[in-house]
Length: 266
Image (cartoon, rainbow, N blue to C red; front, side, top):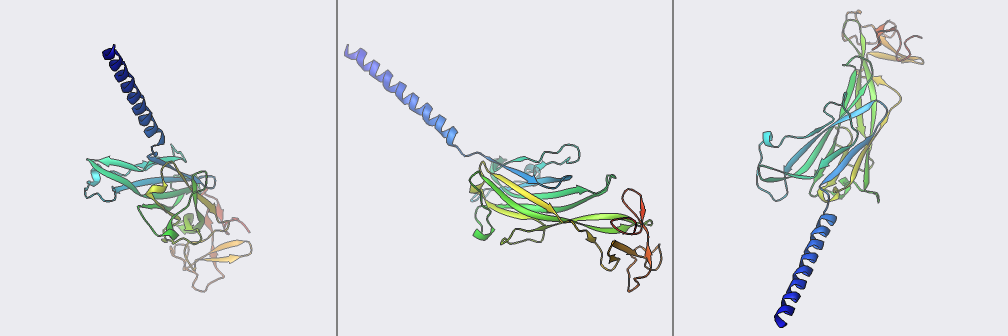
């Protein structure tokens, strides 16, 4: 009887240990930090972005990985045809046995101003990620796990070609108060330990008034901007050079001939 009882006790103990291990294993996976975060945007209608994500060896690692083995994933590469505003990004990954961490997200902001495929303006932004950085450069998250950074974009216009067709350039500035700017558009900074399961959102607003892309080529009137003639209509640079009496017509992106921008006619 003693032998049978001992075997029974052993089975009970073994079963208990097994149950505890299963529980610990389940708890590990339940409480384990996610290995991703989400990047998304709030931008004016017609604006889209492309994100290129770069990885470097994890802090403390001495391994190196060739670029061909550590290619940067690109989100919204085909942004015209297949666009998703939400990008789920890995925080840690390994290549050739080398542990890597996300380091930088290079962003390109696109907006169309005409129907032609080339009628698109673009500018840059970025998210910088490090193990540690200055407190003043680190973004914060609210109780919902969301963080925001801000940019302001505006259109600049000029004429191009023999017909003086309007071409527009998109310029986006960083407007995050109290943050260090890079001069390369909107920027945000975070530490690695902030990211698991979080959401980073870039909010872009648009400046209402457009401005000339090249100085001393347009003159502003109450009804809009007039294009200086220059030496002649064939003058591709056509600086005003003090001549504020002679102006030329120009073509809008849709092919309409106009004398004042943006209203076309006076």
